[in-house]
Length: 295
Image 1: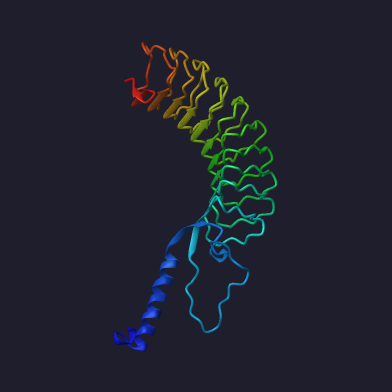
Image 2: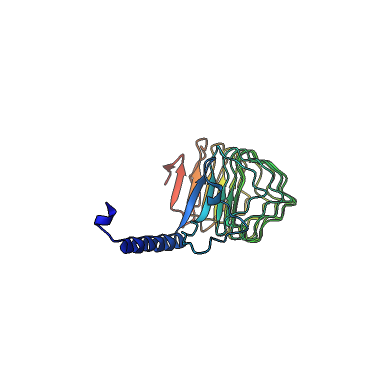
């Protein structure tokens, strides 16, 4: 049927053109690959020898910059030779293998661990260019001796994490820190990174803030459900733009010196204090309780 429409020569040209287009597309486009049990290993790993047979034209391997392991496929990764160009790896819900000895891709920028991961990471050599690291709900390991990548900007801990941070040297360039539900330690002894702009304290956190040495550039502060401490003596960071209190907070705010840059302030369902006479900063644009405006 094809011979009625094209000569053998034109078919060959079509094949070559298709190969060229496919090659150019794969060279320009990076893919998010979801890996399951039936996914060919050659798609998400590489081998030491990548040579092709002499005299053959082949489509180059597709570029994968984000690799996600499906929940039903949780392989050990200690001996994996990763694809070059990987920038993000997301592990599935059941993944809980040791990471000691893993050789990460040189250009990796983000690692996300799933629900069940709870392995020691003190001896793990993380990729030097890593910028984002997220742990799932079950992770609760000592991190006091972890060597963090110098470029790490985002660090997220899940619900079960309850380790003290007093002896932990957080990355100097860290910009976002999120602590999970179970974290309930005094914040004052923690040496927060000076570059921090976003801080979220979890569900159980309920300690005074008067002695906290806030990072000078902090702009967003979230105090979740349990926090219910007096805040009259808190010296808020000057650049703070958003403060969010959880449902348990019900303390007087009379006399509180709010930061002059504050734009958003939210209270939870329990808050019942008088707002009369409160000196609000001129910058305030949004004041809410349970999402309803108080302005």
